[in-house]
Length: 422
Image (cartoon, rainbow, N blue to C red; front, top):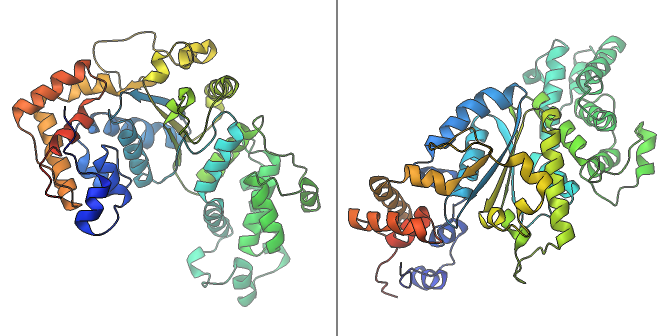
């Protein structure tokens, strides 16, 4: 399909006298936008899978303590990123915290890097504020009654209730919430207890010590381990060896904060076998195999994690390349391959083939609807696009069987194939 007439980012800037935003650029390139409302308007067919996952995983399994890993693959433009962003958006509506990032930005061979990025996006202090509210309720008070800018202890002092028994009850509640939970690392639990106490105003925590604790939890290598010992911790540095255990602790604290759980979406994993010098991260054979081993260990440990779901997205070359792809690492491939493949798409399968899903869902009428939704969204952003007719939809359906580009992207290209007046 000829794409020479597609409006470029430079054309857009000239025509509109302003630079192109990220969502417009994404549409122009046939990629999933970040804007949730725009993503919803573009979604056609995918609810067959996303609504099912929302019901079975987000609303039932994960929030009740389950854990799951899904691998999403397909050709260029098949909707992998769209599916992952859609699931993350649905998860946020279901009261989940989400962490989304690309393998082009974060090293995957060291799980410490993955944990650090998840920790950065999850805003631990916001979770601990919710935990502090729960402590206040357990003490028989209402968080809504604490004036803005006051700690709980400030409020108790104002009401002449800051007696020794109440202070002891606060410490007991913190111990039961964090230190008595066997799924939370002891040092992680103690750090969270101290940070939550700082929010409550008891036990008092100086700002310097708060920053030390958050720095250690966030894998800041500038934090000296010895500086944490006066606070009662006996920690070690967070490394790839203990990062999964720390992630389990983080997921537990997130759940204690009143969230349904944690959804982690990692996209663009085909960079593991990429050889382009333009790739921001270059994986050697050793780093690639370390990544495969890290994922293998995550799969083996997944039952020990609670309230967490991982989504890994990658182009199908990562599956098809037998010399350096996933199949080259037997310990990982044996754990994720589907032993039984039925004629119907299995929505419970661990490997989600977006091309196979598209073959089942994207009939010519659906393709026409997809082009209509895309055209409306594109026109609203200043990109000229028109819905396609049935004949073009049938052509796209036929070309997708043998081509390297899948139906959604071919549909976008067809809708944008217009004469430009630039």
